[in-house]
Image (cartoon, rainbow, N blue to C red; front, top):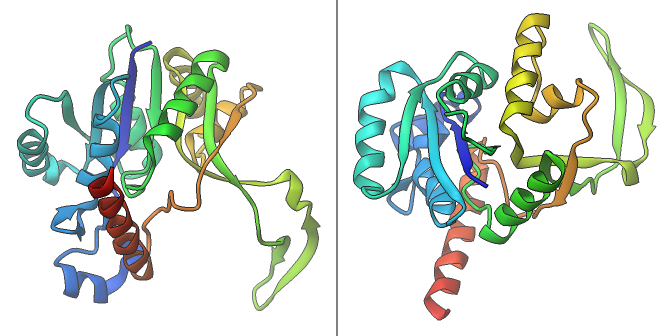
Length: 244
């Protein structure tokens, strides 16, 4: 089944802060360098390594279309990797990319552009699950105790302790049948609903979404301290490849 991968990469990287921008030349995490290559490139490489991925669509800001397109074409000259204009939110960016896919698309996988340590085995497991059920995401069990709170003007107070055994921390890829995801975005737009991830759009249609076990290594790089962990993981990956 043909799989199209969407990588939303139009974020402004506000959580990286001024210090990161001064050190790296940009606060936009998807373009920060990791061992000489932008994080985005590391992420694309993971999906380009799968023979089940037919195309990769990267959604970027309008001002980045030309140079990111040239960079991807140079890095992946024989691969179908293309850029589209993203939106002001992740949801807008994914919807814009989704609109450019052909009707022959079987599955659509949405993955955070700043999760460069997803492994091929997990990618294929979530592809398989979505092919069987129509909707699947990667997730890991919650290890911390999670509290439900109420927020006042000057305080935050606990209202409930949520049962940890019933909780998972959602990761990406999140993979869906093309027609199912397209309808989810259509209904969300009609209702003015803004979700925190693609699964939340599908769930509200009373569709069951399966969870495939993920990994603590599948980190989302969002703050400066994450870069230290990313460098460690990359060194370990490189060493493993050298000995394989």
